[in-house]
Structures are given as structure tokens and as C-alpha cells.
Image (cartoon, rainbow, N blue to C red; front, side):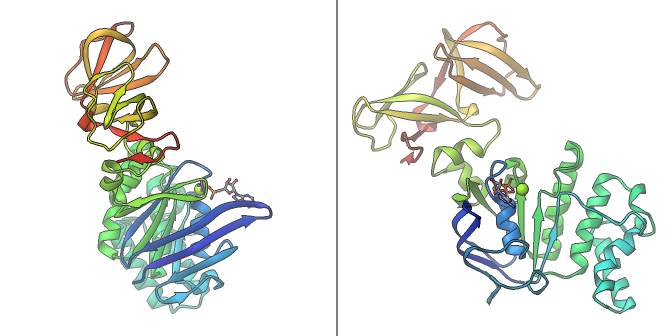
Length: 351
Ligand code: ADP
Ligand code: MG
């Protein structure tokens, strides 16, 4: 088992720079998730670790080896892609063992490895089937099996569940978490889905436009984001942002909301503007007429109320009561300053 270290890694396609000096340490046996919006550079960075993309500048180490210039086959990694591209004419067992067969491994060894992988992936009963007789989730398991039989030091996953329907995604998420526990290998997993990142990761790397915004354990990113981007990206429904004005040392009024102003944050510059971040569960409906209810989602155990301020600012309130309000109603929205986060105009968190 082995960790992965990126040192000031840069990627350019011609004049276009897509990765801007990424530093990162993925520890031995860690489950690390790259998350960020589409186009932020997640796949590019993963493919650079795999050796499928050249690294323009900087270095990549796997364990104690510098692999920056190494061939993909020399890196000790195996990659699982979103599209699993199984050979349709081969059985599950043949698909899983094909790579080993091509590299001249003895038949008995291939069989042993395929049997072991199919046990881990619960594919034992399907080894003789062709891909067309499998569900999407089973096919993706075969693709993961292809990676397992190679016995890599590092597993690389690029959005492996994105082609599956929602229910299967949840099921496979549990399977991949179990796989990591059982195999214990270092895994780097790319997804645009922050829920997937939150549920799988030991460590999340939030990427935006080819730069690392923040690295941390899932709940550390949720509880203590460094900036407005991470605050808004991690958590579902997303954090609400309301314009705020500094009223005096440490005091901020969130415009249009009912709440205390003492923030406990060392803010100065009366009159300056900040952004007040409030998670949906930290807002409450109060008597008043400041916000218009646009929509309500009453899910039973939890309700989400979508409301709009006269300024057009949209807010989502989460309530664990089965709220009585309906679209068109006017409400006021309250909060406690202790629950709020404050962000400067450039998006940096004010602490
Ligand atoms: P993600 O996986 O986060 O959606 P990608 O890593 O695929 O993002 O892409 C990051 C950026 O690099 C995007 O802006 C994309 O257009 C650009 N890019 C990816 N591959 C190439 C390429 N071969 N040539 C030029 N630009 C590319
Ligand atoms: Mg991608």
C-alpha cells in the first residue's frame, strides 16, 4: 500500500492552463475524493496521476517513487471509468481476467484472482454471464473487478456511478465504501456530487477552476469552510447567502432577516458589506411580512420552504415540523447570529 503526493502540479493544453499548481498528499490507505463543478479539472488531475495525461510541470510521487514521467503500466495504479466498456462477447470472468491474460499471467493465478475479486464484489453467481445479461450496477462491479485483479497499490475512480440511476448509485456507494474497508488500498475518487463525496471520503479535495479551494475531512469542510465557494458547495440544500452590513465592531445585520447582530467575529469597518451564510436548518419562519413563499416541499419528516426577499434574494428554510405555510404566503425569517458564517466581498471567510 502506498500514498500519493502531488507537488505543484500544472497542466497546460497549448496556451490554456487547466491545473494551476496543485499540492496534495493522499495518505496510504486513505479514501480521497476530488469534488467540484464540471470542468474544474478533476478528471485531468486524476488522469495525470494515472499517467494518461502528461504533467506539464511539477511532480507526482506514488509511495517513494517519482512517477511524473513513468508509463501508466509502471505506476501501480488501476483506473475505473464512468463508462465501463466491457467486452460484450466475453463472460464476466473473462472480462475480469482479460488484462492479466494479455500480460501473460498463468491460468491458475488468473482464476484465483478472479474468484477472489468476484467474492469481494458479490459477483460469484454471475461469472459465466455475458455483460448484456447484467444490470448497470453489476456491469460497473465487473469494471471494478478488472481493477481489483490487477492488485494495484492505488485505485483511481472517475465518476464511476454517474451512469447509474439514483437508487443504484446509493447501493453502489455502500459497496465501494465496503470495498475500501476490505481492501484497504489508497483510493482517489472523482465526482461532481458532493453527497457522494461526503459519504465516501476520509478526505475531500474541493477543486474550482484548476485550483484547490480546501482540503479536509467531510464534516470539517461542512462545519468550517474557508470560503464562500466551499460553504456553498458542501451541504444540501446549499447554504443561503444574505447581504449583510457591519453595524459596529463585531456586529452584522443580515438585511431583511430577524436576528441578533453580535457575531463573535472580529469585524470592523462600520457600513462595509459582508455576505452572511446561513444553512437552511438554521433559519426559522417567524411572524412578519418580509418574504414571499414561492414553494414548499413537505417530505414528512422534513419540510423545505423556498422564499424570496423583495430584493430577489432566494432562501431555503429547513424545518422538522410539517409547516403550514403555502405558496403566496408572506413570512418573516429569523436566525441566530451564532449559527451564521461571514464572508468578505472576495469570498474569504471572516472568522
Ligand atoms: P472535470 O473532470 O472536472 O469535469 P476536466 O478535467 O475534464 O474537468 O477538464 C478541465 C478543463 O480542461 C476543462 O475546461 C476542459 O475543457 C479542459 N480540457 C480537458 N481536456 C482537454 C484537452 N484535451 N484539450 C484542451 N482542454 C481540455
Ligand atoms: Mg470529469
